[in-house]
Amino acid sequence: MTESRRVLVVGQGAREHALAWKLTRDGAEVLVAPGNAGTAAMAENVPVPAGDVPALVALARDRRVDLTVIGPEAPLVAGVVDAFRAAGLRAFGPTAAAARLEGSKSFCKQILHRGDVPTAMYRVFNGAARARDYVEAREDMPMVVKADGLAAGKGVFVCDGREAALEALAALGSDPQFAAAAGSILIEERLDGVEVSVMAITDGRTIVTLPPLQDHKAAYDDDTGPNTGGMGAYCPAAFVDADLMAEIEARILVPTVHAMRRAKVPFVGVLYAGLMLTAQGPKVLEYNVRFGDPECEALLVRLESPLLPLLDAATDRRLEEVAPPVWRAGASVTVIMAAEGYPGPVERGRTITGLAAAAAVPGVEVFHAATASRDGAVVTDGGRVLAVTASEASLARAKLQAYTAVRAIRWPGAWCRKDIADKGLRQEHALLVAAEADATDAVPPEEGDAPA
Ligand code: AMP
Ligand code: GLY
Image (cartoon, rainbow, N blue to C red; front, side):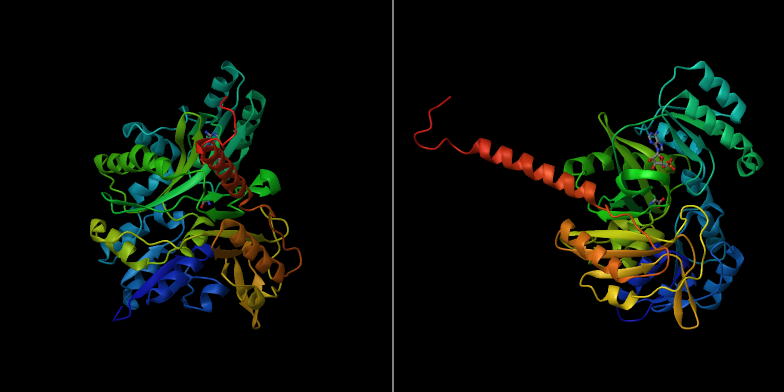
């Protein structure tokens, strides 16, 4: 790259740190609004909150930013990309109308229906009381209760049966946040299977599919405990082989992009499909309209080719011109280190030590999720604090290196899941055993072996 490009990354988590890290390596000069202690060490933090759309527009204009990359969903749903476009500025991400794919679960279902994309069966209700009547009248079976709007992952209740569903509806009905939103409620069939994340960069027409990942949404080992924003991820997820990836593209991602265009809300940005691999094939649990977090961290450490040309081309609707991305061989693992109490309330301001030692572990990048600088020290500043990420020749090595780095880092109350990537390791093992069985079946019998 000859001239340096100026890029603004909006957000303050580990996803945004990983984006700033990669874009810096691409040769860009990076601003982050508002960023954290990690982004401050490698880019320029500007103290503008991710939700202050007019201030972001002013920042991009005043600092002559070429491209703004929006990390979190809330500003997208609030129309940050529309505001940038109206001001003649370039921003990577969907418009508010297209971001409803994440912002409204009922809109998402309508699009899935129009595109004939496989998803759970569902009904939409106007308020908790109507939903309750339905649950009481129907068969006692597993179901999922969802609030329609954005709820930062807190509006979904996976229920074993009627009693749990009624409890979920009572909780939603009495929650002032949902009552104030007067939102719709979805009741869905519960899907069973393995959950994976598949993301694609799209300009509304062409898609560039990224390698599959698996997140770990439950707080504790063996997928127990409360739901979180994600406790770790790994890439690639061996549950999705090349054939399944082709099916996911052809039956899910491409029809969704087409359905959005036909609905006159072309989708530009990252289309993130949360999928359940069911016995009947892959089905959409939800769409997100931005990079996953922690998926983004595990993804970008494996991206060998530059990211910026992909984001540029998607923004300018010429993605078909860009060479496909090149991925490092091997695998990556991201382990989230969280503060005591997460996903509940946490105390901030605990001093973190060992960051330099962790970063010195071969193959490791430590992305900051919620940190701040205080008197020359890095302190905790939220629930998910660090995203310790390793890229290695194998998934087993990546896990080893990530946890080696985790052990170097300390603050009072720090904790993490110990089993990130274990499902992937078990799947790799199972595939190996199956391949071995196939191979030995094909071996001709040794001389002297009696034919059966
Ligand atoms: P969502 O925000 O819609 O992705 O839901 C959050 C989590 O709830 C998902 O990651 C799944 O683990 C779970 N979930 C959502 N919908 C379903 C469903 N229909 N069946 C089973 N689990 C679900
Ligand atoms: N990792 C889940 C999400 O970003 O929504």
